[in-house]
Image 1 (tube, rainbow, N blue to C red):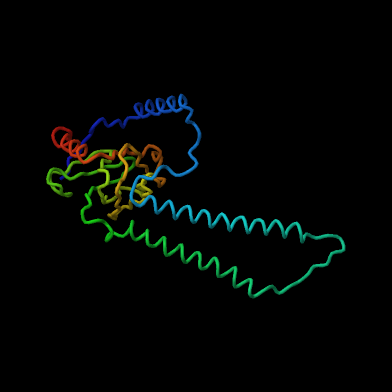
Image 2: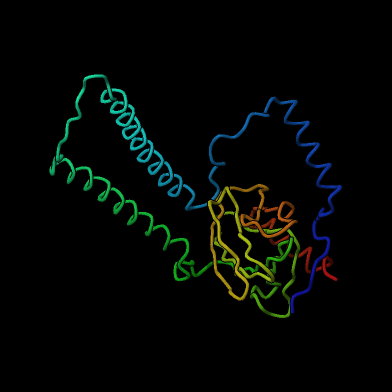
Length: 259
């Protein structure tokens, strides 16, 4: 049975500490002139973030071109063929050839995008796609926190030496991880923007999601599903370590971090 770690590695969950941290970061941002809004996605931090960004950009460009064509055509027809005194309406059946063309082009485009999207959907979402060397973690969502269960010294999840940490996710860079998602109460959503990974946690279900982080550092795990009045504070810190750093952190928790 997993042991709960209440204050692992500087866990600062109380509201006062978070408020002080936020004020400190804001002051630093002002000092550096970095208060401008981020207008694009955060820097990619996982193996499949790059392909997802490429697909996202392709869809944005295609739909943007379609928007311009449609709106320019609409405005042109509204102005050029507007009602005028003494002008009679002109009726036409249309062009079968033109109708086939403007139907075929979007249809082929949508099918192509669908096939490409399905490839990455299977790669990310299908449980069979989880690499065999992936580390397994348990992530349990509840109002309003994340409980992450790690395997102990035996390296196996679901055994007596497991330990649980609140609102902290620790992983290794360039190492696949699979998280077994579950929810205690309502639908939550596991979301790390830098990894381009979002997966709902549904009550009564255990859902597997996997990733491989490519950048060390500290990031944020947020709940992307409105889950109640405390939704705004359902956040966890994500730490991407080197292998040695991760081993040292696990050893620290096993040695003295549990109740």
